[in-house]
Length: 289
Image (cartoon, rainbow, N blue to C red; front, side, top):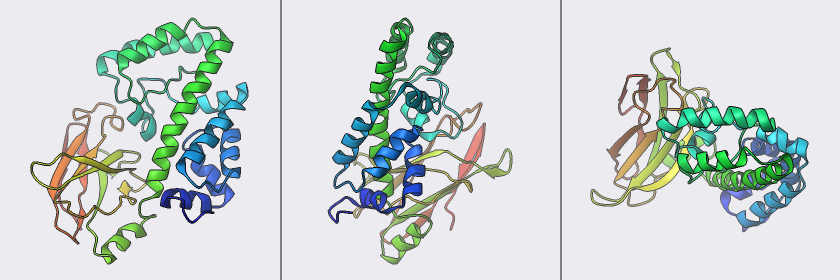
């Protein structure tokens, strides 16, 4: 492991092979791709990691690609708790979902797998146009397009993975931030309609330095089996306001509020625990402990 690697990459370099493989399967379900990236460690830069991903993509067989695609939900219908897909498909409007799903079924019947496209930054109409065109491709042409699109998705997810690993590790991260005198934030979500934690909800943390300043994305996380986010990094110096945004739409089948955003004032050196109590038609937040 190189000492100059960024913190998140250094953590990835240091874990044992089974843990590295398990982590990489959250990015791409192809075991061949994951084995190639795990075996290529250590990486000195994120660029080296992304280049290794591209190289591994070129060697995937049709069976490897099928294994990877099987983990991707249809465009317009991310699976509950699939934070990565929900985030990537947020350009799809409700009015476009029905047509996307209908064309997805026709595409899948013709090609034998889901329609795969790098959805990040694309609108629903752009994805519909691509779907209408690609449904008529032959198998070989479509397989190579899938390889390219999957490579783009893997690069985005690997970059986010390294960023996530750069934060405080595990439940002890908050305690470490507090011990250092840093300002920290944590949260958990309780689905009060069923009396259980809300698992797999994407939570984004943003910061700003004053009332007139722009919000700056700081980190994102995913609620665990206890409905908690344990890996949010400490806030940067100079932060006076923080904002938590909860992507509740993909979690709730019929969500009146597709997202919940709460902004609050912070003081240096304090810890702020801001839980969300959630139902399909209402929510409340408060400062906890």
